[in-house]
Length: 174
Image 1 (spheres, rainbow, N blue to C red):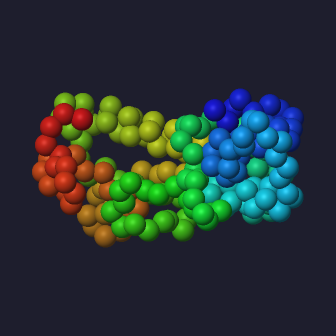
Image 2 (image 1 turned 120 degrees about the vertical axis):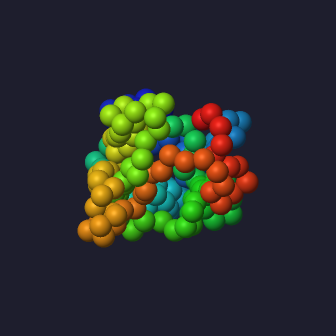
Image 3 (image 1 turned 120 degrees about the horizontal axis):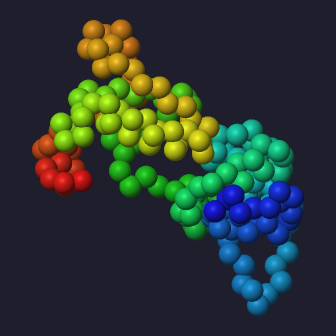
């Protein structure tokens, strides 16, 4: 976890973090590996680009802060020939990346099994998890504002069953 990186974030910790999350290839423990300044700068720039922070290619305060945040263990980068070979989405409705950091969402309906207040709290808690460890912010917009055309949102949440565009219909528990 990124929170395990020490306060000082010395050279070894930077390299371990960059390797763990796919920005540098793993080293063979039987060999001494020297990394060029250009390799380190490229790895840092790729990490900064992925996190949407200023791309300096240097370990600045903002970069260290992002390295120290708690996060999942899945690498951001996949091993490949390109140094900027970013992790691929498994499924995306539009296949496009948002160009903004403030994400709006609206809840059209809720599941009767859980009820309105608890459904909204659970969804808000889920967005808060992402908001706390990414540069994104999330705002709920009342669905009535979508219906009357006052606003549009990035994400519309609908509780429904049936076919939704892939091979797994929403029709059971989960």
